[in-house]
Length: 316
Image 1 (cartoon, rainbow, N blue to C red):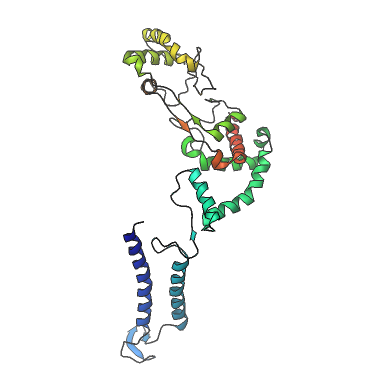
Image 2 (image 1 turned 120 degrees about the vertical axis):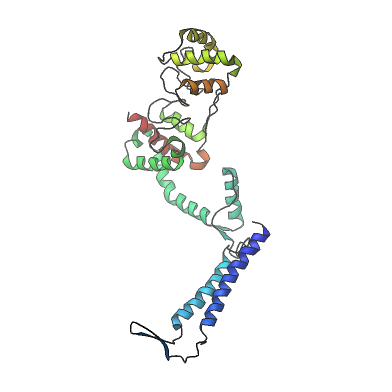
């Protein structure tokens, strides 16, 4: 925050408290010209207004809240860039990565700063880490039959994965469906766990070098592999060009999970099944990224999450 806005906020905050205090002092003085306790000569529906002071309890409470406001602003951040005498803050602001977050936590702990978010995280770890450690000691085959563990896994999924894969885990354009047994890198519990821990970086290169006609031929052949009706002449020419693609997708076009190359024969398309979408993939390539969650969640939580995701495809 710039110095101007810091000063501006401080003036408004302190000025408001001072204004309320002065208003109270002014209201405590009798400026009506009528003695206290006398009739103000205002009557409505049989109710007569009497010139009475503010209740003493109300006045004391008002003074107390004004003093507390000043004490609060002195102890806690609230006056622009002033961090407060206690050094308290809600969280480590401005961090852009997990590494920066960890460094900020260590610095705050070293310097004795009171960071509320860090304290809450430590309390949560002390309470829940033993539970996740117990879950991590069980194999996935046992966890998927544990309703409580699956509820925990579902919450982890909704918090960390649903933004891309959807709350029902059925994915969307560019993000895989996790319920259908069609896995780019393998659908075993260990492979799913590996994917979540370390992330994935898809890399389909651009084949614009084929030229516009060459791309049409490859697309026609790729679509024919899943039983789609295409131009036979384009299909035949595309088959010859497919030798380049077979390096990843295999000569049978059934994909390669070691590389994350999809099966082209099952009519399941991550970026769209239309001719236009497949043409875009071949022409421009694809570079999907699945982030790594090892540092964010830790291996114990990932084990529960992976078990939950594995259970989704077992229900089909």
